Length: 67
Image 1 (cartoon, rainbow, N blue to C red):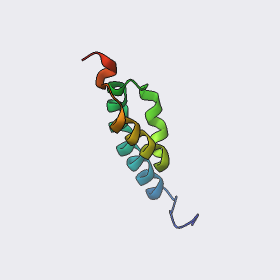
Image 2: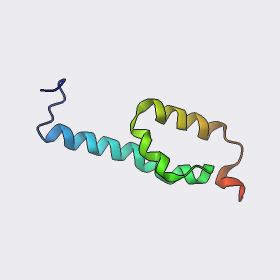
Image 3: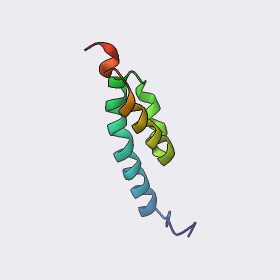
Image 4: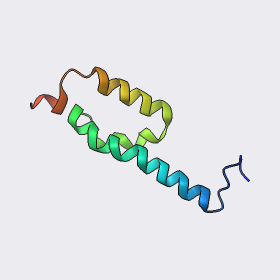
């Protein structure tokens, strides 16, 4: 069963749902920090999501400096 994920349809559906639940918030937040929103697609990888969170946490200007 391919590592226990059960990709018979139900497992793949859950994988897509969880991926969307991770990507959508990044898609909305990243432009406020001056980062292109297409970078949010890479947030499906846990290490990239963690790096993006750190970048957003320590970014000096929100809204790309337009505040």
